[in-house]
Amino acid sequence: MLKNRSLARAISDAGWHSLTSKIAYKAERAGRHFVKLDQWQATSKTCADCGHKLAELPLDIRAWECPGCGEHHDRDVNAALNIRRLGIAALRASGLHVPAPGGLPKTVHATAAAVEGGSPRL
Image 1 (cartoon, helix red, strand yellow):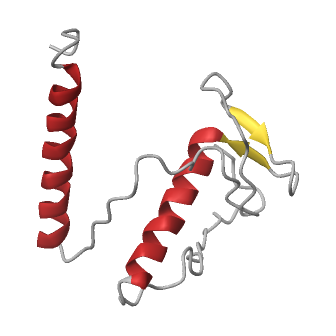
Image 2: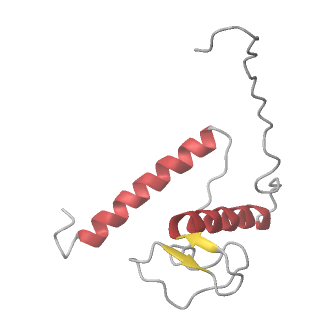
């Protein structure tokens, strides 16, 4: 259906609207907030560390190094970090309390098996 040039955009837009409506419903039902961001935000080409924005970043470039801070970025991971930051900023701007992103990592305790002297190792 998307190959039809005169209807492709309308069909695609209807699909995204349906998806976002379902996500918004599920988020509300779970007591979560759903934030829609502008689709033209330059999340892939804006450094998530220092905020430097590249003039251009072709789609075939999957990783890049920021000229501002020298940080190496995977395109998709960088975009995800920027989307998260923008979503949190939008929630805070609407007056909601949002905890600091990241927080403290959970401590993982690993229990090592004790090996007795003279016992065979498996």
